[in-house]
Amino acid sequence: MTKSFEKNIDDLKFQIELGVSETISANITKDINKANSLETNSSLEHDSNELSEIKTLNDLQSFIENYDECELSHTARSTVFCDGNVDAEIMLIGEAPGNQEDIEGKPFVGKSGQLLDKILETININRTNCYISNIIPWRPPGNRNPTAEEISMCLPFIKKHIELINPKVLLLVGSISSKSILNKNLGITKLRGEWHIYKDGEIEIPALPIFHPAYLLRRPNNKSYVMRDILLFKRKIQDMKIL
Ligand code: URA
Image (cartoon, rainbow, N blue to C red; front, side, top):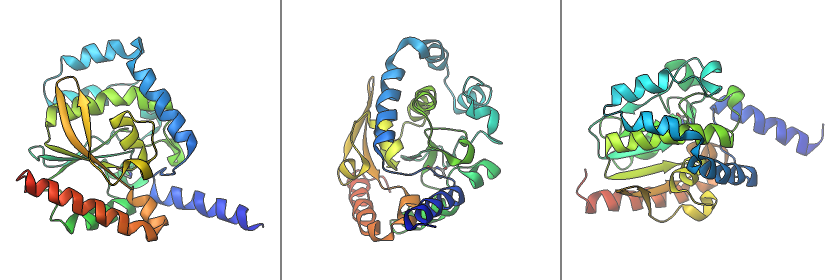
């Protein structure tokens, strides 16, 4: 076996184990740009109209649970909607459930979620004082990357979710979450390290992108970047008197 072949196999095993498709590749950027342009097209108007009628989290959850136009909902065991405190002023947004999340029906409960919990604990954030959801509520089969169409179908759900939670700050976990929420054609390495503004109609919320914990498990040398970013986050929530 060649070294590069072994590395590819290791990469695949790693992704399957973590249940996340966190790679920083040109394809993801292309897909997200496509997703954002699809989302602004009329194909989603029907859902957007129905979504605009939704006023509660329970109704949003039922709407998503009954939505069967996204193929992912047919292959996943669970619709992973949220975890944490619905009254929290801090909202975290990840990419998509992995295997453990699909089994338990909760976001970030697998290995990468455990690392995320440890990182957050350093600034006294835990599931009692933050709210967590994902861009995609269903596990992509084999933990592959969500496609542009899947992201575009699910983006209105998370936007509605943000509107209903009405958080004061957003922590965007990983490249897919950051690019699609911020509608930016930039990789996570460019987006992280500074504050951005999430805008949706009248809504404007400061948002900080960070590396995905799955990426950190794979590239532990990058932990210092996340610790720097998490301190930026801490300073902001202190300034805003959130915690
Ligand atoms: N990775 C994510 O982005 N979200 C999860 O819920 C789990 C792993």
